[in-house]
Length: 160
Image (cartoon, rainbow, N blue to C red; front, top):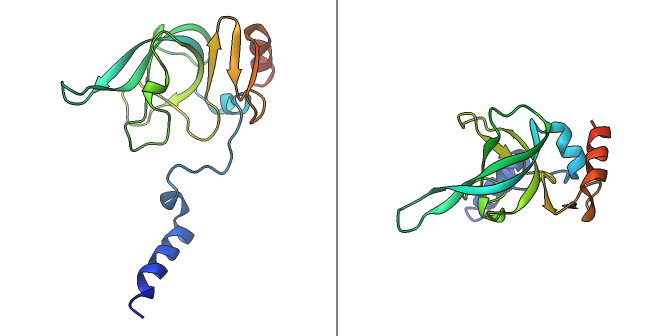
């Protein structure tokens, strides 16, 4: 009987506390046009720097600094915003997934424990890569699409 107790406890925990048992799983993976509705901030911007942490000999990026090119939703306090990345215990994207010099459309929400900071959501598409005048990612559905930035702006405006 002693052998079954750990299994019963684990089964009970998964059954009654599924979010803790599946820390990074999501019930729905929504495309960008749907997640943007729930975002506090939606901007197109260029990654200009990282905020780094760690030991001096081994610094790693924990946030991205975004120079805003266009604002679609929300009111950031300045033309540059800092968006927190995953530090290894959260589910949102790592800052290193946004190389310096690249351009993105991101949907972010106010970070509850950060002073004026932002975080990218975890369940769904909250980021689209921009290259020139083309935006790419899960825009309308779960399939990756590419479209002209001008067409994307119209879709985003009409989806609100």
